Length: 211
Ligand code: AP5
Image (tube, rainbow, N blue to C red):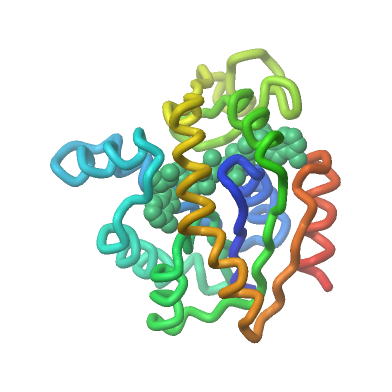
């Protein structure tokens, strides 16, 4: 089972990806996490990537596509994989086709812009693992600290209000056209109401994958 999670920034893709990965034992590939890791390394590429992340714009395709295609070729993807954050524009969608990467299911987490602002402003993350919490909807056991490592949680710099706005603009202009791109393909495309509670969204996803 190879699947893609599509949805606005903050729709809950990363949160659900972690659950699906465990439930279905497939590789969880987040290009956002990959890029944050690159940005924490040293050198020219790290600096370049960091400027895109902090401005809320997309990292150019020539940096990200090859990295992603290589990642999909790794052993842990043989049983299946889940793409969280890729593709992000039509060229990336076409690049998957050109690389003969077959996709069985696209899950579109649909949600309103108002709810997105609430989710991203309350998000707290554990930097090294990428685990994501919400101060109200999905709080850690101890406020401000990761449940597994006990390390401090941070607010992502791209969750600042002006960057959230930019990320949403980028979503509407570049990523949203992928919805029709996949609706018109010969694969399963399912829209999930992502405004529901975390458990309800998980249940809808489980059913969509199992049916
Ligand atoms: P990326 O990390 O992919 O960010 P994103 O798509 O903007 O998505 P987010 O991680 O912000 O949100 P999410 O949908 O995962 O929501 P989450 O589960 O955390 O990308 C970051 C950057 O990297 C991009 O801007 C770009 O620069 C670059 N990049 C990445 N991929 C790229 C690509 N392919 N090409 C070019 N550039 C790329 O949930 C959000 C909050 O809501 C959390 O607090 C969570 O606890 C809470 N929550 C989740 N579900 C629920 C629920 N059901 N009810 C209530 N609260 C909930």
